[in-house]
Image 1 (cartoon, rainbow, N blue to C red):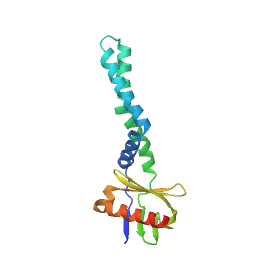
Image 2 (image 1 turned 30 degrees about the vertical axis):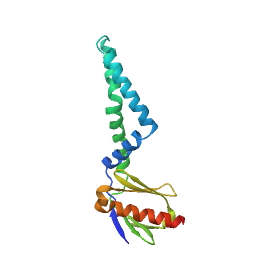
Image 3 (image 1 turned 45 degrees about the vertical axis):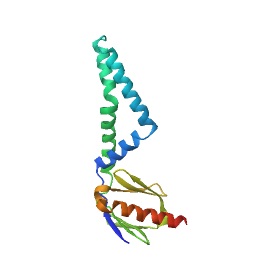
Image 4 (image 1 turned 90 degrees about the horizontal axis):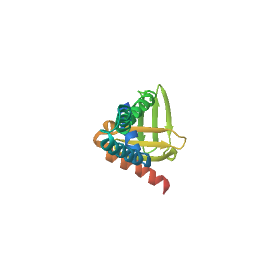
Length: 159
């Protein structure tokens, strides 16, 4: 079997991944508890508080649903700008062939430390701290078959 993909990762793809990981972690749980608590405080004390406290309550209510996602987007937009736009990956039974900027590299399957299936992408992590992301938009209908292909090579390597 052979797969070939052009990595077309956008800031929106990275943002969705970051938001998923944030809200499926302890930080996300704490953020949601904070947001619910601030909304409850705002509802309870808004009418009897002064202008300064009203502004503070309104700002605190906007932290989790508006400020945190906006800050995350600004951060991942800078990161996504550093991803090469011409990155191509070929997957075969012999390994992974990576091409970008006229440079090429071959990765053996034993160099892949982990394969992670996220809601909107598949991530391959190498042992040297690098990773390759393939969004569901790029994978299309092949995403499930491709993930099974990757995991079969990972389990074959361990066995």
